[in-house]
Length: 415
Image 1 (cartoon, rainbow, N blue to C red):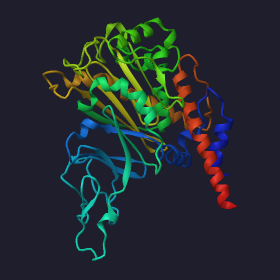
Image 2 (cartoon, rainbow, N blue to C red):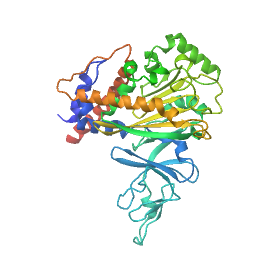
Image 3 (cartoon, helix red, strand yellow):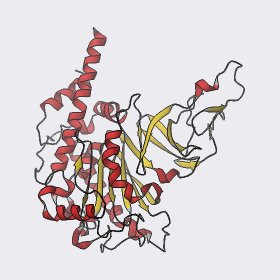
Image 4 (spheres, rainbow, N blue to C red):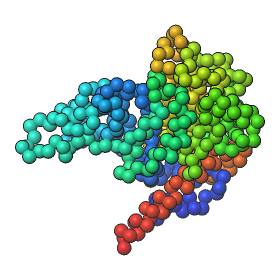
């Protein structure tokens, strides 16, 4: 059987509430299917509006085989293009980020406007048509300061996510914030292991001493159930809603994205070692309430987020290979906050810098053990790992019909 049939059969026969069979975490052919059926088809978080605040500002990102450039055009719109020259395919933008009046391919100087139109191609034939050689567009959407792209020819509807996410995030002014610091690490584990580790705090007490000073280990904070029956959580939701901040747990019908607010421990207001603000200026001038806790957003497969009153921490997940994943973390502050005046950088980033490295070690040990011939799927804790179960169910539910559709197409082609 081919990899599609193998994967489909393993999804159908897997045990509910258990980790996935080994090939899902290590097999190169299964990884190709993940890329084809999820990463090349769905909306992916790639960055923030504030990173390209001026016309001509751009950043680049690599999604599997696809290099992409995201740029702000002369009218202020954010666009995304395949970062491949229409001449001979060279990358047009070779830096991670930058600014340019026009996008010029370094190979033969084909020159594109910020809207992707080809403006100049030296010494081509008389019948050459520049209009037929614009950069190829990538679907791009911006919501509340977050930029998403979709590589599919026919992208899924973005509106359900916008409707859920925007009311929670718009008050925090991330569209006008600034990135105070950015860090990228490579975790030597499959992207699903990165997500499974993130979706529970069963491991937190033994592994995250810095985070546990402020972040609650309660299953209903990281998981997907129990919030409505937790008096402290309901009280926090009510307090935030009274201040005009949507707070209650909401989840997409298909389980791909969700948002909620949660209180921090011991009256903490920020992810610092003492729970005090890391930034003396609030992230948004629109939010005047105190102790709003953490606004959390999860959108599979690329991002989880924590927005506090003084700063935001955003995470972007991108697979590199079956056994390597990049995790990029960005710390956002008010656009006018000044380092060493309003915040100390080491205090701002300390908790999540330590936590990220601890999670990297956890994921890598997990991946190491899964490669053993003795590995078999084990049971999750229904109490503490409900969020992991939900992620695995989303993954299986997302992949199975797409695999089924691919199988049907293959059978038609053979016939």
